[in-house]
Length: 251
Image (cartoon, rainbow, N blue to C red; front, side):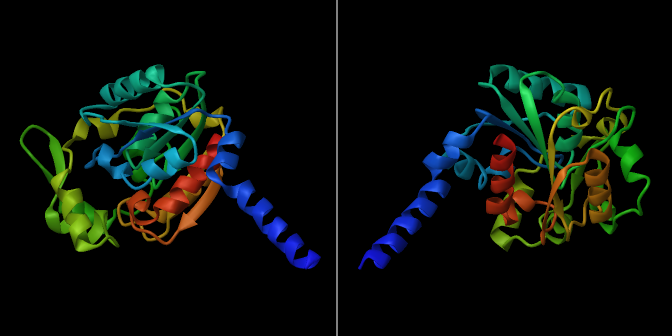
């Protein structure tokens, strides 16, 4: 009987150490600021947000205009300003460029890149991507007369949101944000990942950003890496794993 009580007690201790209350007690950051990528909006984080809140974190999902690096950085910095610090700054895809520039303030304590670009000082998105073979997905990009890019519905389902159920792929297509081409050529002035702890989710089946590019960035940033067997929108296909890494960054 005493042995059974001991086993029960051990199980309760193990549960308590992983419960939301226990996790919250270990958190050094107070708020997570989430930055969506190109061709997307804040709903990209819809599956991750409740998991972060359950862990005891406050969450802000930025709605960036995708007009330029300067405007997206300005929107993100306002979110950081209004957040209770310390802050974990998270970016997906193009959002990685944004957090690399916007994350240099003292309130930001760590960075999380989710299938994202992480340029160095003086580099733009184009500078990074040009070092790797063109992805087939680029053929599905459509540019209008004003210089805004979108991805065709077929490109969303085949490349951008690959691996999601058809109904979720359709939602991604419907909320797609237009992305101005000028944003891709603006360089970062200082790379925040050079000064702050960084964590990177590598999506091994990504057809938008080459997985080899993502792994090389992990080495450059000396980041902690999590690989997931996911397409580009890893936070929608593997929300638990992504949320766990963000919580780790908050600790």
